[in-house]
Image 1: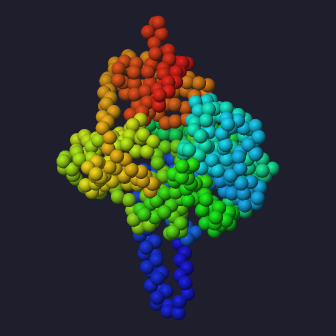
Image 2 (image 1 turned 120 degrees about the horizontal axis):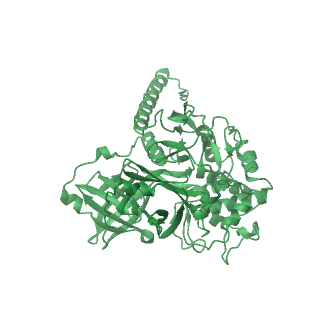
Image 3 (image 1 turned 120 degrees about the vertical axis):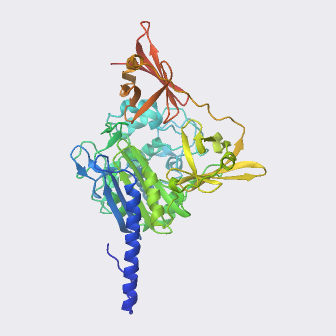
Length: 552
């Protein structure tokens, strides 16, 4: 690491500064190294490329695990990863560049550029697309998405897949993360600029910033140093399912390296591409029609790490997970890229950022012991915004938190009122107000308040053991729809399900032919024909029932 202190007439002082800075850097390196070693990246797992920068200069970078498991290639900082939804930053900046050139306004209605788009009588602006408040249905939430995962499409063909879906809410009245909005933004960039999205990004961003290892993604183009994408099956890793990168398009198709993304962040910080005023619109969150603040701006989410303001974005795509965090007051950037769609790289980058700040998150190992009276005090249900209910329960002197529709997670006591989840960057602060129990729930620096309500926790589901001969009847592949299957297997008297493009999960029998998942709130019911043979299943989640015929 090269240190360049300011010139001084007193040589001794300069030497002292050098020694002190070097000692701090070594201490930081060691702290990050110890933390990352705990995360389990090794020669038998997919990798992580991570970079920490201060004042625009790299102060720590590392490659861990494997960029290519089949060819035994270790991860390095020059490996190229699909960055998923971090692509949205490039799309939003492109829109703001065009606005500064006078070619569009974020307040323009989208029909000015896509005349035949069916707005269903609503006024939808570019602003609504940028901050996920349009009410348009996100195409990645549609059951048909997996059907087309391998199919190359033009932007207009992709738009045709979702444009006639019913609106989910009136524009500007709610925030709902939406990939369809960024598909429309990519198309608007093409209409206004006369270039394809890929051409525009390359000419106006990659080439201008010397991002020589960044690409509009392709599954056919030869990409030097491409890190291969993987999924976790529960019993090992597999190559991630194929996804045509024409589908993520302007919402998620860019590929890059940690070093190139530092060039990107430096350009953003220096207002090389857009003005300070435009950047403030992008990074300072935004408002709904009723003047309620939301943390998402244009391609960046506003947050906080240990009291330090952040703007950040994560990405998840078949075979890859990513997260980038910038702390403007400290001029610090942390970017992490992984080549597995498993794990939580956001927790890693948040923890590394906290370490670099000198304010590491507490660990569950630091938890204090509380007695049963102290723990029981906070048991109950808490209602948050939009009717979200979280239940706090106690078992074997351990508190748990469960959001309705999700799984039960342990929380660990740091004080009598403060409890953290594993990883430390999500927490509860319990307190009493006007005789009523309250809970501050904080994640990525964003806090919401919940008040206690009289509601029983979800009933604990009881699993049973079924004979081996019954379990073997469930084995097979079930087609939910073309291109999307659930494969059922049995090992060691346990049943596993593997959905296309996802990791393997264990299924638990509640009764014969009826199973549930513990990793998420979902059920699988197997169906029998007149001959008592299993011929189909029904996957049940979020009130939806998706039948699937047994194909083999």
